[in-house]
Length: 419
Image 1 (cartoon, rainbow, N blue to C red):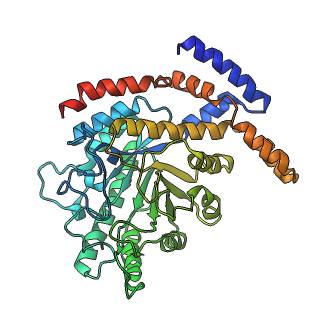
Image 2 (image 1 turned 120 degrees about the vertical axis):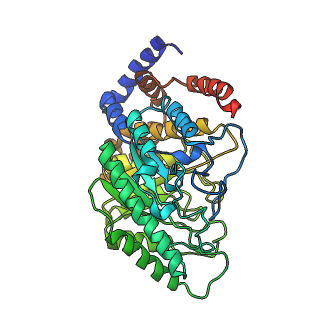
């Protein structure tokens, strides 16, 4: 499709949207400004650079597609290439296991900004901020499946110090990039089989988290968040940081709460939880993934749930209170394509939410005209969104339609195949 065709289609689409009361240029500008946090771990199968090179702690990556990033420089190169085909504001999300020790004999309880300075410099080059995650997995100091809630006080002390160091590092991220940093806490603690004491580990988890956050620096631009999970591999029967625990801790301690799309029962969706949680919490973070039968972290597609999530955020005015981040890792297909597909789909859903004639639908609902409500909801589906999306991609110079895929194939041939 050439530029002239895109512009012609856009003019038609603009007329159609304006006919239902939508300012298309304003919608594009709004959608473009909302940050989406891109997770670094898609590029190297969550291996990181500070550990034994294998995953433990209830995490598994499937597939062996060629071209996995093996070094920090390779990963940053892949991220930069992917970002060139992703429109809109982007954050970069990294885990503590992506530290670069540079020959130093230090462990996770001793990390400082020095081990992440290359990531800060890279983020500044890209014009992004940095989000952060303590890494409570893939480490010999795990007590089986336990970290902050271990019965062993030395184990807890190690992971408490790790949390403190991560919070300090996030403040440096914020200071150097000038952008907000979300620090997300997910702990894989739990039991594979039925346990006899469900209370003691939660008591210890609370004690450990309190020690971390009570001594950590505070800033309105550094957001601490707690992530819940239904279960994990090897902790099928009891999860310490369950939904009820994590939501309650965040609410009681004034933190944000992270909703992961794969961390609930398969019949639950996080789009249905946003307006409920934000009645009582100031902020919520999202890890958007796609679970297939369980928390399988498939690449997100532009499905009804992704659109419902973005509708809830945009239509309720939650843009300043919800931090949108992606979390999936697929090693069965080209990893860079995974980033681009997921990030572009997230932006499509955001733009589509901004373009929705939601006020007319809500007016019908307030008036009790549920017939019109349903009819208008369905009419929205056939508005010429794709023409607006193509125009937006043209303006951002990120490739129209499948153009980006040709570039990825070329990068795979010239760069990834040599690894």
